[in-house]
Image: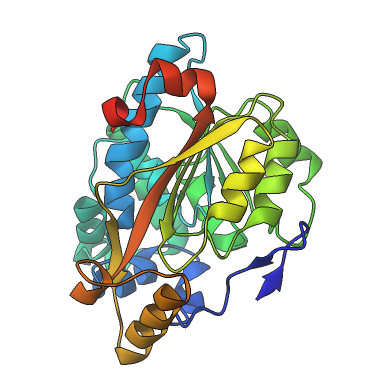
Length: 289
């Protein structure tokens, strides 16, 4: 485990396979080709939720236009692509497997991507700032226009740069799909220190990772965390029995059971949403989602 600045450790040794070879390539083709084999799907679930939250924020706070979204563990800008453009995750899998794109250099692919996403940009698009330790992935996402600001910074081990502090100041919504555990209380401590008006936080969290330490931290900034109780969301298929057994052991350690969830062969995530109490009273979670 890696210790964050809060002294609480990030969960980096939970028995998952090592995909580090695809997270920081010059372009996302290898990333999509690899994860498609394991039915990686949590960004698809995030698309529907994050769009709903963005619409709700605009209605509750019409002065916040355009919205400013910070995507943690942003990688190649996938959540930004799905939030702001008329595309689905299935479209991205098909695109990056296309023979037409296979021979392009990373630079030419980025230019092609920029045109592709520009043609499909939604009129209510948010400004997205992406944070990820993978420098080449964030540079690529910025080159394509998916991210307005891109920062290759690991807030578990370093303080945010002055430029990142400035970009975070007007944040309306923080999103993360599955990165919690790699980023933990250290990262959220730093984010909250840079946001004078605490933003909404929407996190898809593997059930093997305790979220309560982060919820407690957010509460100290006036955010109330609710968990969506009526369902979980698949992340990806287990690669093999070692991942399955490690997951079942972690669930048991947390008093959880895989029946009806991880027993189907997939990692499952819970959705947590943290908001100011006044916003919850105005729009309860059961009406929102």
